[in-house]
Image (cartoon, rainbow, N blue to C red):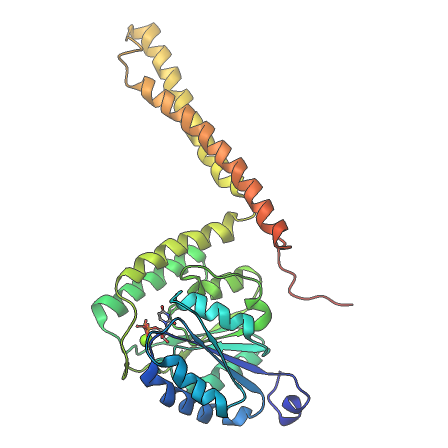
Length: 324
Ligand code: UDP
Ligand code: MG
């Protein structure tokens, strides 16, 4: 992929920039100005997709004014606040470019980093993720939890990144089309991309302190991210075969139950311990009941994955290339 004038003239759109905005009215003018400057070399080959995530200030009115003079500025507005992931996802569905770049709308990400991201993509990567090496956020409730989260996500997914939380990333659009996003899942896209066979790179990007408007998040996001990590791990490791997880748990429970049953009988016949007074009796019951429950849950989960894939015409694998 290259960004020559002939390419854009032939009508293939190279680049879609997707930005979520929630109550960012004061950032709109400088954001669009900085983007237009940074993207001037790609003239005619890019579109800006700005998604208003149910702002209660004049964000959308301001956006509309810009759209009236910029034909490559495309807008979407949510009627209420659905969250950053949903806003990004809406933008992904609108995107027509071969490469999709996401960034925050508060100017903490620097549009001047976009060319470097694209240059890296040209080396044959499917996702290029920004790394805010010198992060300009408060330490205790941002930078520190994020360090821990990055370490944990890298460990658990096996996909190592310094900075999962950085919104400034570039994706090949086909990669995005593979996933529907829920919760805070957008930050796990690099892991999902790699899991589906994509190539991932990371480059250092600039990060700036917020000048206007306010942050939308507190420490609470850390917990959402951890829960979503559980979902991602389950989906990527066992999504196609839930019975393996539940089946293992069922087996462990039943073994525990039957083991304590044997102990019960031995204690009764050898030592004459009353079975009714023996706490192992409860363990036996618990183990067997849990085992049956786990097994049934596994069967239900297996049926759900089939419904999930078949109802959406999805396959449990991803073909990255086909010839003829
Ligand atoms: N955002 C959004 N919906 C939300 C929360 C945030 O669209 O519910 C946008 C917000 O306008 C900004 C980006 O997501 O463009 C990142 O949000 P923020 O700057 O508050 O996060 P932080 O940089 O503090 O992590
Ligand atoms: Mg921010």
